[in-house]
Each structure stands twice: as C-alpha cells, then as structure tokens.
Amino acid sequence: LKQFACGAVVPGCAAVLTAPDEDGILAQVAEHARDAHGIASPPPELVAQVRARITDVT
Ligand SMILES: [Zn+2]
Image (cartoon, rainbow, N blue to C red):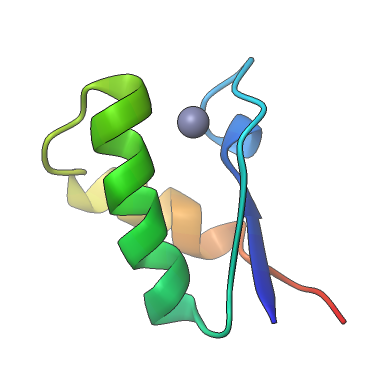
C-alpha cells in the first residue's frame, strides 16, 4: 500500500491519500488537487514532487 500526505507539498493541507500503487495515488492526487486546491491539471513539477514523497505503508 502506498501513501501520500498532501501537506508534504501543500503546507497546511491535512489530506492523506492511500492507494494500492503509485498510479492510484496519482489519480487520487489529481482529484484532490482539483477539488481541494482548484488545480485542474497538476503541472509536471508538482507530479514529480508528489512522486518523490509517496511512501510505502504496511
Ligand atoms: Zn491537499
């Protein structure tokens, strides 16, 4: 299981997303970014930051 804390990229955001794999995380991030942060399409730099901060959880 993978986990991503949005606060690692967006200071102050308490959202923590989990998914079975990295693609699932990125899909959830895209949805969360749009709904919570008004980012319609995350730029590649943001996606790279997200990828770098995805962690494994058991
Ligand atoms: Zn967020």
